[in-house]
Image 1 (tube, rainbow, N blue to C red):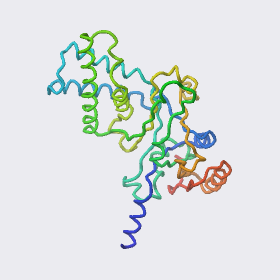
Image 2: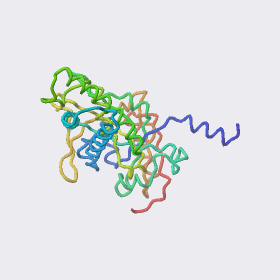
Image 3: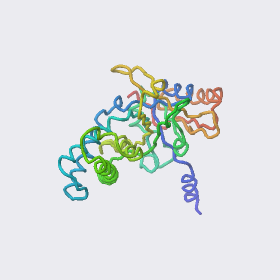
Image 4: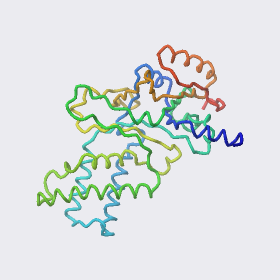
Length: 311
């Protein structure tokens, strides 16, 4: 194997990291609290996403009816749609955003991962930002804390956002078929389509639908290559002590903390990129020392390779 081939093999052996871009305040909040904040979906940058997902899936329902792949009378269809909207309202969804750099042209070199100019501009103020690289398979093992709770732990899902229309159609149709089978079974048993038709079916079926809504993104955002960690809370009354607030530009923003286990042997944090700034080299040295003081080991700290500009 030539030198280039050997290098490529070594690169492919590296675990893929998902990057979370944040400010200096955000970085130290994560490190000191050993947790990352998941923001309520209604307070994210694009508040229309979930409604767009609902509109899309309703459109696919109508198309399935035209193709006669779902046979349903008009009045039943309207109740079915209301039920879908009801499921839509049952969950409080909290989100953490990551970006996936592997296999995109501008980050073909692993050393350039977590160092994207568009992300620095969008999420790191005045160049004083940090990019945290988390090992994907370790993030997927994290559980949302549910100490002393009698019910099930709210599920956490980590998956890639959907941008392409064909991906959305395929997923939406599969979900609709599953939900319709549950709906049809309920209607058959109750001999009615009235009443509280929103609460029915199996939790996995409903979660697949909510997850579709959480991962639905407009094609124009494809450059972000986003993956999302989502926490779905079915009954917020059981978790009121978990919901906290931070100050935002337009008021207080609800969030929940997801514990990371940064001091454990299977710590998911593997790499931190110090964003473009005139003092990035000093920041790298300082952060390496601080990580040791905090008892966080095995994290590579590197400076951005992007020339500093006061954007």
